[in-house]
Image (cartoon, rainbow, N blue to C red; front, side, top):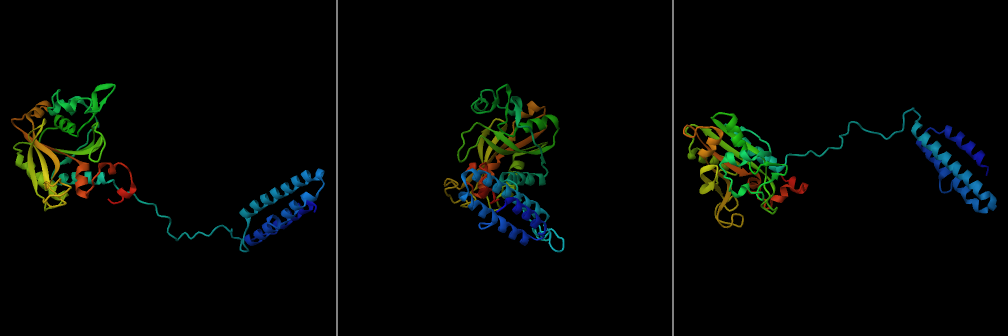
Length: 337
């Protein structure tokens, strides 16, 4: 077979093709398993040795030319009506839906907590995560010898020894009372940092919500009433609440606040350690020394403060037994909320 004659036939034939079907028939005729190129290739072993290489190069060139012509024609092929034979797309069909994300469970709980207090007159304020030692400790009546001020209990910044990653959200209490005069009613959500070993109930980074109120005549009974409203709203109206005496440097008197176990209703189970109670937060009346640091007259004003871990509230509310689940980004867990 004369390859030059075949190439001329190819170029002439492809000009007259105007449908996908005709293009496929053309491809099979020349490039199919029994096509012209295959037949040419099968004759190479029968040729004299000195002709094999030259003939083989010509066959390859022919195949390349046919492939090139096919590619060009596929983009230009038209139907009898002159409409391009591109894949049909029904623009009326719905598209591929994108999966819509949602708020992380800790964000949901933080917003729920803040919303409860916001509805009863508290403002929501945020503060910096890098704090001064003055605001994080001294201004909160935490003495120099207190264990929390040691390097193994706090993330101090290497190049700025008087600066640290805040270990609680309470420094915003100091900041707010320095810049605003009473009456004050504020809640402060945010991240806090402590060098704790990570386990089922501890993390080196977690979330808190701090709250405080300062005005004339604020009493411990006001604190109790507000926290009971909060607990019954975020958990359920059937829970009971109790205050246990405790110690915090920045409040006096101080208390740990418990609610009756939401699993066993106070009867005792593995979740509450058979005690029937679950600790949810710490609270107390703001210490006079805190008022002294921020320039508020403790003889004229009184106030209370409370603080809670968002992870703990979420774990109790949803029955989660491992804090690490919040930070592993396992969508099978996150999709539940």
